[in-house]
Figure: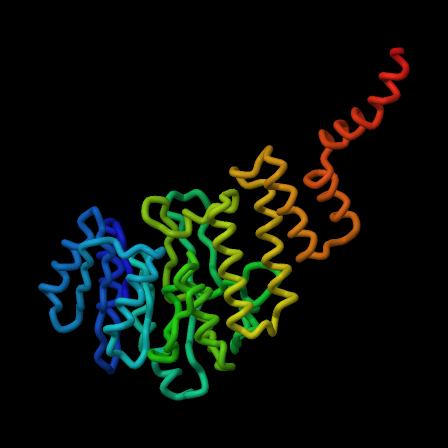
Amino acid sequence: MVLTYNHEKFIRKTLDSILSQQVNFKFEVIVGDDASTDSTAEIVREYYSIYPNIIVPMLHEKNLGGFGKANTLAALAIAKGKYIAPMDGDDYWTSDQKLQKLADFLDQNSDFVACFHNAEIVFDDDSHPNQFVNAPDQKEVVMVEDFIGEDEVWFIATSAILFRNGVITHYPQWFHESKSGDIPRYILLGKGGTKFKYINETMSVYRKNRNSGMSFTDGYKDFDFLQNRIGMYRGIDQELDYKFHETLNKNIARYYLMMLDCKQFVGKYFKQMPTAITYLRLAKPSQEIRKEIIREYIFPKWLSNLYSFFALLPHRIKKSF
């Protein structure tokens, strides 16, 4: 399942890496193009003309919106496969055994909902050195609680997972509203207590590109992005019946802390002050941090000076007489 938008520079490599898979089963490649404004759709049509029994083009005339979620759900709705291997149109697989290895594991282990491997992160503009998604100590068996933390937890690249089709039967409103696709999907896959298996091999590339990559639009200084993350984690909290409420509250508090200095709030006391109070209520930080937040955002220096001015005003007036 390839989800693409304005990926003309990358989509050939993506599709070639899928078509090169060495497998003992049939598979389809659903390509959902979300009304690209470049030549992506034409390239997909070209591949369809060569591989009409494998490529399933789903070329939308209008962008479906929803951070690509509508495109994803439209592709899932027509997927016939036993398993789903999602892929963004700028990523690619680096092993021609990827599908076979992951499918073999799931075939032999019915108590696992998904299987994933490591991926290399490549920055298209060379702004950062290449790195890997998974650390050397990555757990081999993962459950839903492993996706929950006081910080954001993400360790499965989109191009690195294979999951059972049909496990998720309902997509709640918070899923549709979330800008993130991976984190909500893993929560919904694992919420019933099912397991994920990690295979310690690097078999794909997760490409970060500024022109058409969603990850580069994640702005931790932007109110809308931060508010979206807060909404996502509140949805996850409800989805998991508040089992991890305290932990998720601390995670949510992080976004309120970042919001204090977002570009829409800088220098605006009446936006920062209630946000700071919310942060303190959720995070329950140390006394030292609490004093700092109160000093900087709730009772800042300018407000202290203003208070002092009015407090001393009667004395000054009296003295002047």
